[in-house]
Length: 65
Image 1: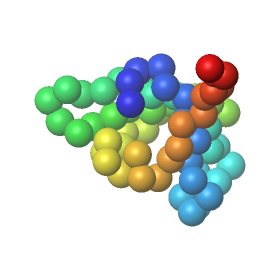
Image 2: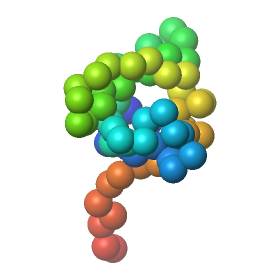
Image 3: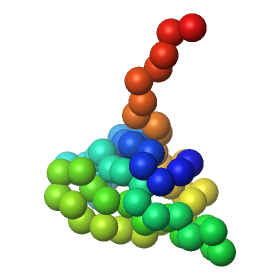
Image 4: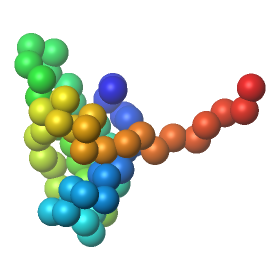
């Protein structure tokens, strides 16, 4: 995971149901903290890196070989 990654929360993360898509805006190299910005609202929140990987999935365009 890196700054600029576009991700979406999994369906079971209910409290972000209406604002599921977000972008990673900061990664703290000294801890497991990651800041995200919700696409719909611009709300900024902080998550644990491992929890975020578990609670979301990448949204990317897959390139054909």
